[in-house]
Image (cartoon, rainbow over the protein chains, first blue to last red):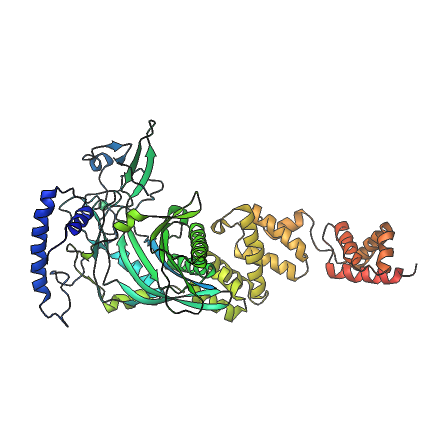
Length: 95
Length: 488
Ligand SMILES: [Zn+2]
C-alpha cells in the first residue's frame, strides 16, 4: 500500500511538520512500509479476542484527592521563550 | 414544508475536586488566581512525567453516571485525543473514546406537555485545557497569552442522544442536568466561572421523517443564554436554507456573542482528525461492583424524585415542585417550613409563599437565596398570624417584604407599625359610612348599575384603615350600607 503525496502532506500538517519535497518522497516510502507491515498484522483473525489496550495489569492505581503545592510561577515559566506578566506569550491564535 | 428540529447536547462539567485529574496540583478558581500558579511538570506536559488518576474525580463521575441511570463499564480506557492548540501543553488531551466510563442513561425533563425522557449516550472522564487570552500590542500586533491553571482539571463529558426537538426541551435538559450535577456534589453550577460548557448539534428534517438531516456542531457555548441563542439562530438559518432549496453544510460552528451569529470554524474541521489511541501511560480504569454499589447507596435524593414526592405528598403543581426541588437550599427550606408548620398551614400555601413572594423579592433585590434573612420558623410565624386573622393577606405580604429586607421577626414589624387587622364591625361601619358620605357621586353611579364602583369604594375603605381592615368584614359592611342607601 503506497501513500499518496497528498496523504503525506496531510499527516505532516497534523503533526505541524514542514517537509521538503525530498523529505515528502522519502517519508512516503517509509510510512508506506510501516503501513504494509500493519496490513500483514491485519490479516490475523482477531475475532472474539478483546483488544490489548494496555500491557499493565488491569488494576486501578488511584490517587487520593490531596493537593500538593504546584511549582512557583517563575519556575513554570523558566523555559518559556516569551513570558509575559505571568503568562506564556504565543503567536496569535484565531478562534 | 414544515420541519422538525433535532438537537443533541454535549455538556462539559468540571468536577469539584481539590486536586487535578492526573496530578496533585490544586484546583484554583481560574477566573481569579494568578496565572500559572497551579501548574506542575505533569499538567505542563513536561517529557518524562506520568499521570495518576484522581480517585475523587472517578467517584464524582460515578455519582453523576448513576444519577443518570447509566450502565457503568467495569473496565474503561483512557485515550489520547491528539491536536495542537496552545492551551493544550501535551499536544493531546487525555480523554475516553471507545470504552467510556458509562453509557446508556436517561434524563427525565419537565416540559409543557408533561415529562419527557432524553437518552444519555455516554458519560466519560477527561481533562480540561488551559485558558487563552487574546491581546494586542500598542503597535497593533496580535498575540495570545496562555494560563495553564485550568489545564488538567477533571472534566466530565455528558453526551445526549439527539432526542430534543425544541429550545424549551434543550433548556429543560440543561437546567435539570445542572441541578443533578449540583445535588450530587459534582459541580458548583456556577456558570459565570465557566464550570459548565455546552456543545450542541442541530439538524432539521421534514416533519414526520425518521432519517436525520445534515447536522452542524456549535462549539464553545459557555452560558444558557449563548446556548439558546445559538440554537435559535441555527434553526432559523437552516430553515431558510432548506426553504430556498439549498443544502445545509455539515460543519463546526462557533458562536459570535458580539454579532449574535454562528460562524464557521473551518480551521478546526481540519484538525478533526484526532487520531485517538489508548493512553499508554495509564492502566485500564477498573470499577469494582462494590464501589458502584457504595456510590449508589450514598446518592442523595435527586431533584426529580424530590419533585415527584412534592407533587404526590403535598399536592403541588409540577411547576411549583420543580421550583422547590431544583436547588438543594430551597428544598431544605421548604421542608423545614413544613416541619415547623405541622398541621397548622397547608403545604401548598407555604409553597406558594416561597415561590411567589420570596422568589419575587429575591428577583427584585438581586439577593441570593443562601443569604435569606427569614428563617423557616419566621415564615411559618407570619403565615400563622395570617391564618388566625391577626393580619390580613395584603398586610402579610408587606410584612414579609420588610422581614426579608430587615431580618426582623413578623410580630415586631406588626407591633411597630400597628398593622394588626381591624375587624371590629362597629369601627369598620363608621369608616364605611364616612367613605359613602365623601363620595356621593360614586355611590349614585353604583346604584345606576355601574357595579365596578364597588371595588373602588372598597379600596377607599381599605385606604382609610391603612390596609388593616379585614377585607371580609369591610366587604360585608359596604354591601350592607350600599343596599341601605339605595333610593336615597
Ligand atoms: Zn499539575
